[in-house]
Length: 326
Ligand code: UT7
Image (cartoon, rainbow, N blue to C red):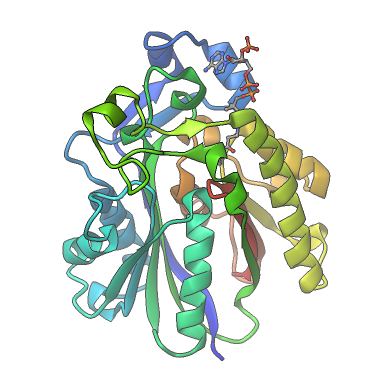
């Protein structure tokens, strides 16, 4: 079995910024409420025609360049998204075309906010077994296309963006050391978009009933998110016989600053060892960890040999954690 590690990262945020002041003009909310309940001050929103695959390809190009590769070196492109360009074909195929990655197989993976962690775990399997040498793993979302901008409980949280990482074979002892991904489909209705699939095919009625928009039971989700991110982090650390004190930097899914703080408290992570960018970016679902990772890499916060931990929770429900040596 080969070890799999991240050899290049990249991210892309659409230019347009939607501030809390903008939202105050759209729904009954306030900057105070949004900041105190979520930590979010602004988020990026894709322009018309700026599709998920376009922002994903832009993040992907930066990751490929950082890894010192060309698109033709890729054997596989994995796109984690719940905001595909189209129902058919996969967004990963559009990304492959944008990049000219002619030698890569491409497919999408749906695990909502845990999508990047899920996709990294799948990619690790391809590298470990020698089925792929270089895999481009992307988390890309345009939740602004699925959010009901009359529903103040959801529209203040989500933002658009893409993050990417190249996973390649690395020397033993480096790269992904342990990961654990989990699901509980009984919680599906805590966060879902009911319309447009086989359960409720698109019709005038589904549009009238606003079933094509995201529905969220935020308060219930909050508690499960804190519990499961904490437990799964403990689980991977225990498997490696590590404690949280051994981890140089924790990069959690940026769901809500209060979720990050609660997980930090329970695990005993010092404030300077857990990364937060939610105030500038909002909750970008599967893109949040790779965007944060790329900011840390390019910002000089991660050094060779550092131990990192990722942890996430999202719709499904899905959750997971991963420990890597950089
Ligand atoms: O990414 C992974 C999946 N997503 C998550 O993990 C999200 C998890 N959940 C959350 O982040 C939080 O639950 C929210 C930010 C969505 C909501 O915060 P909360 O503290 O759980 O608020 P709540 O839903 O309990 O609502 C409290 C009050 C309600 O008013 P009443 O019934 O007490 O009068 C809401 O109607 O806040 C009201 N409210 C708002 N007020 C102003 C809800 N949204 C807003 C808003 N502005 N945007």
